[in-house]
Amino acid sequence: MPTVRLRLRPLSGPQRAADIGGALVFGAATLPIQVTVAHQADSSVTATVAVAVLLVAALALRRMSPGLALAVSWVGAVVQMATSQVPSFVDLAILGVLYATSAYGSRRVMWCGFASALVGSVVVGGYFALGPFDIQGTDSWSPGSTVIVLAVATLFALLLAWTVGALVRTARRAQADRAAQQLAQAHAAAEQHRARIARDMHDVVAHSLAVIVAQADGGRYVAASDPQAAVAALATISTTARVALADVRLLLAQLRHTESDGPQPTLADLDMLFAQVRSAGAPLVVDVDPAPTSTPPAAVQLAVYRIVQEALTNAMRHGESGPVTVALAWHREVVHLVVRNPVASDVEPAGDGHGIIGMRERAHLAGGDLSTTHTDGQFVVAATIPFAAGTATDSDEDGGHA
Image (cartoon, rainbow, N blue to C red):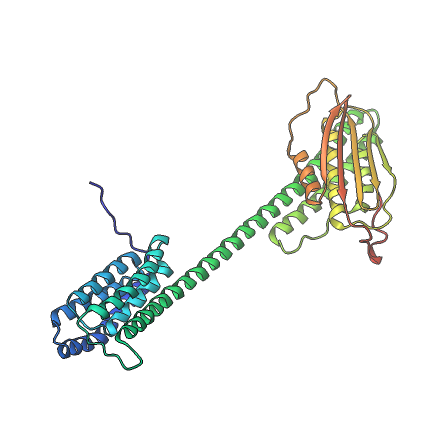
């Protein structure tokens, strides 16, 4: 046979003690009144105590199990009516139970509480109309009108308690949604920060290592025949390594202090980048036409620099011997960037590695797009990045050229 398990809401020790203690205090305050009313109405004291115990128990259970509390309160009300008892202060516990059904109960329990408020008001009206009560009228007020007023007043009180609980439930859920949204935003921001650091680390380390490897290989080959060239290669290795070390230290500082991004490469740093590539032995051709008429936004400058840096790194690492071309066209509200390098025509292009993925991410973050093609022995990286015209400031007028 299937078993029914009673599920209690998890409450802390102080919460459970407050509910039970409050219910006991309520019962101790109302029970003497109930007994006095029972004596005056010649009702059964035992039944009166039983009703009080049931309603006090329902009040104690209102947060631990709103559904069970609602059922117990209905049992207490039925016993009260079956023994013809006069409603008294102990019946106020029903308001607390209805509040709990809408504030803490499941969706089903919540709507059961609403239905109980409606049905309860009708039952109260019928109890006063058909029960052992001598309801008198006046010349302008009939007994039936009195019963209707009592039923409407009961409905108002019951629905008020239920509505307050529903408002508390809505406010608590909205607060939980805001907290969840803030947590999700924090996670997304942290993920974006990690992704940005990963892209910067890849760009800096990969490019610097590519230059160092090319210079080391070249210096090793010409060490015997051209010592001066070997010394120049070592100087380039030293300079590149120092720049890379400074960049890595900057990235590590950003990891420790996320509030400050620190300085980032700009268009003015492209000349040093091109010099490093040329010193590594790559025949580099740079074409900037038209040139920027004002300083582009910092985000666009960073995206252009990092995309060019990664494209040139790929050219040195994977390309064939031959000229590498960089073309930049700065129009009024968009910059077009194309980097070409020769590759073996019989070599299948590899899947998107970290570098290509990073270039695409940078273009997308700047509001543009990037594509790569491999045709006719050429590997082409093409990016289009829009930017708002007229964003330059007076202090930036000398910062943007390639």
